[in-house]
Amino acid sequence: MKNTITNVNTKLILLHPYIQKQGNPNRLWLVALVSVFAVASLLTLVYTRESFHTTNTTTTTRITATITHNEQTLPKSVMRALVHYAANTNSTNHMSQTDIKQISDVLKQCTSPCNFLVFGLTPETLLWNALNHYGRTVFIDENRYYAAYMEEKYPEIEVYDVQYTTKIRELKELVTSVREQSHNECGPVQNLLFSDCKIGLNDLPNQLYDINWDVILVDGPRGYWPDGPGSISAIFTASVLARSKKGGNHKTHVFVHNYNREMDKVSSEEFLCKENLVKSSKDLLAHFVVERVTDENGRHQFCRNNSTTSS
Image (cartoon, rainbow, N blue to C red; front, top):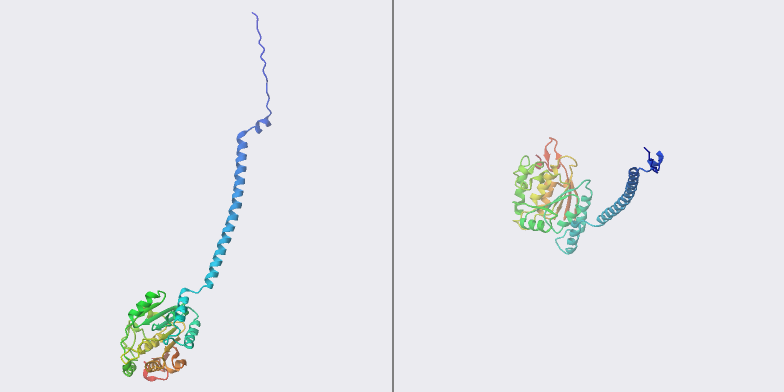
């Protein structure tokens, strides 16, 4: 049997191990992806920091501009008051510039937000509210309709109405009745909310009796005729509120406008006391500084030099 040998040309290809490693496509793609991601993250971080810096700078600039603008702009209440007062400077009912300055100077002396109580709605109402812009200013008036009108027209003011039961022609009888009851109902130190004193105002909002008033102005109620209420109730109430303060500074500045009128002067001397009179301006504005006093027996009294009104 004859063997037939077929030659087959076979090529043998030998691969070096190093070449096999270099040829791994998966690892190459992984390295490429990681590199791209790293570059993208770096660019994003740089852009974000730049953007934040720009935004922050812009915001700071806007805030600074706003603060500067606010510092240069008067509050609306001040602007309205000044415009109102300037438009009515020819009114005969206006308080004089000298008298206004006296009250304004005292308001400036308040070491904390000032509590300012005003009896009477007058041409100076908006001015008082504006001058005590950072404090609390409360107005009391006998005309409920005018009080409601002012509150609606000028929402920034706080005003309440009250009913007065006194009459100017009864001045002597009223003073006598207080002297007779100064040891109980008409005492100089008390909570008027629970008082039956005839000339004390006990129908104000309850919260007003708990406030330590720093400044009180009596410029009302209106009335120049014998049956008009006069100011005796307002002055008596102011004197009691001043002496009934709790804690802190026990002194209260009390101003009485139209001090030249008989009822205003008599009531002031009786309840605010001559000894507390600091200054009077042409007998129109009287300035008292009132505080709690006692006699030798420790009893509260209105005036040190008037034993008839001690309690």
